Figure (cartoon, rainbow, N blue to C red):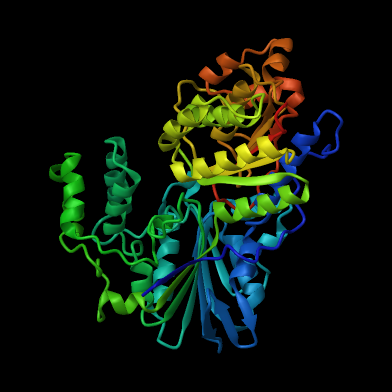
Length: 526
């Protein structure tokens, strides 16, 4: 049975990644803002592709240790990969085990090699004599003919392996679009049309992935099936809340037990069954472990030859951020790595937590705890996590520990009402800034929201840093925050405000484990 492991211990903290602000010590930045940026930097650095791979692959001579298991290297290693961060992962993997590598193929985003070169990320590029072939595709993050050709190369490589071989599979966010392998006789366009119509009809991500896996040769465990009887070791950099292996890149190394009737139930529910092309109906008529792949073994035997290891995740990024916060004299509290839901509700929650932590007196207003717990389900945070966090914040109020660093991560959603330039991190930072600026609590708190990939929407920023001075600063400079928010134009607003000093500008980071939120809370007045 495939083992599911997460490497979340023995994390070493590296020098912080440059966060795109040469004036880190600028007098225009508060001490808390400077520390918030450094904490975010440490979170991103802790999940860099080379770092997570070097933690995940431990080499002792001809023995390779992964996830507590040992594998023998004897010029029997093959490598495939797909995802936005896979190129850097492959470069590090080749540095570790390249002397036993026979061949490799990785599917990476269109233009990524030139982009990494421009951003000074040469360490994430392969050497000229590499045995790994790099193939670019999925322009604009959509499956295309180039990505499909790469997927076929990956399938051919995996299908030719024997029981003596070891296949190292590297997976990161964006892998699904980079591994399109529609089951014949269906075309890629026909498969895309089915999933597009499902999404337009309101299908959930779970429903979409159920259908997507059923229509693919490689997803839903199809790649592991192709590679059998070789041993498969998958190293996974997760960009999905909760790290569900079957959802990350649609689970090419995770067996799917989806039955045809489950797929038809979804299609029936959204009134799509009757309008499906004949090729799609033919594929669904044979949905199961084979999906057009010749099968000689039971699915359980394939699972026994697969090891899936999550080597990088939002949780790991938050742990690295927590360690940095402690170094900086802050008391870290990790709220949750699973923040989701509407961005307005998320901002409201942070505003309530601020009031709980920083309102005057020994005790927070009694109604706040109930309001926080009521809002939790809307933003994907368990009541237990909220109670634990409020307990720590309450102890800080009584004992006066000093500044607290509240950490969280995830991927909230923005309801689009305008056509401006922005992203969920910049908009969240603005909305939390309004929470910090309003009300009776003047705390001096600082809030940062940043995308770990360094890119927030169609902008050059990863996010932004705000505080309780946001409203006054905007009014003084003649900027209408509400107008910019209504137009989803957070980047334009933040670029105009004080010369853009609140923007978070790390550039392309080469990794992606969703977003990181940092809220620094000074001790409440007594």
